[in-house]
Image 1 (spheres, rainbow, N blue to C red):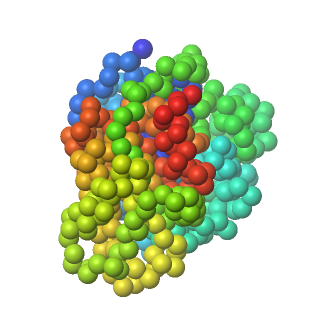
Image 2 (cartoon, rainbow, N blue to C red; image 1 turned 120 degrees about the horizontal axis):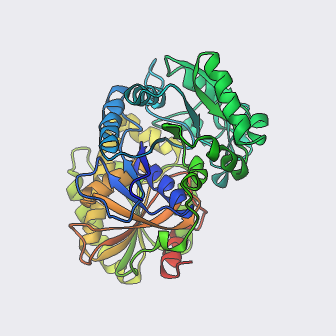
Image 3 (cartoon, rainbow, N blue to C red; image 1 turned 90 degrees about the vertical axis):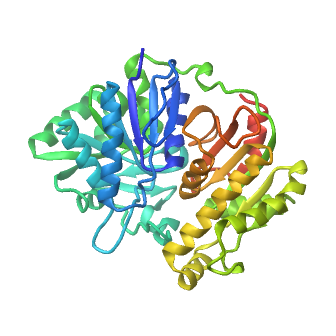
Length: 432
């Protein structure tokens, strides 16, 4: 069948989130770290290229995304999917309001694509779009914890407004009443919008049924932009149906560990739950170390702490903190220095733990995940079964592993139940 769908994701956890939904819908998926440099397995029919472009300036995000597109075009994928976060956030600084729009329009130009859709809806994780407004559960996005995000604050839930501020072309809306009527009504609305000069349309979705109605309307659309939710309705366009073998991974081996850099409210709860249950945990406090301490020295100290605890694994190493603590660190150390220094230390902790025999690793946070997989020398991951909505187990060779490879899950900070960390290892030991 060959490669049918080629995806470009703006961060590493978002890439696994997308790959997870494609696998659940029956596709055999490989996620690559950056533009592929090695051949893909012959049995995959979708590839997700994970970039670290969510929190970089638009011109850099565009350059990286176009490089990924050129690889996909050279391998003759039938459809391209640009994946962004279900909270629709990206790099923000002063008058520059994000890179989702610039990347979308750059991809459209490169593909000679005159129309596409945009929706971060993912009802399984309580992300819905109604009248163009993004909700997190029962709250508007602008009333949720995302309004205080230290890197990508979101203070406007109106996605048409948010996207229009980032785009040169006109942005419109396909609302819930149209979506409820099905694929033909959606196609008719697209034709109507095009006649009005609209090039990009935000799409409402209140449930998975809405996403499944949207899927057939996107058959033949050269470029789709969305969060991961839309993926559930696409494989059927190629006659692909859910199949257990699409999620098969090798049996787990080795020790267990968690590395958490996310400061989202969900991850704060997961860390607190793990600690309350008596799990071995080390809090990496940036202010406990002189600002010029090399990240390797910090990591070596943490790994030495972890070694005696690993026999009773899992162990947790975390820098997770609430918004006030993060702001305090940023004020004392500088926003850029504080984030990058901690991220590098956590990545080296992950590398050190794997060298000590950890081969079942949970990483929480998009930026942390990106840093960890790069430190581990991972270039490709095969996607396995879901732990919680949007979060699957993966398997990857690593140059630092003491076994044939490591099982890895990259968890978006906002995803997962409060007991996610322990649940993840139980799920891997007893796959569905």
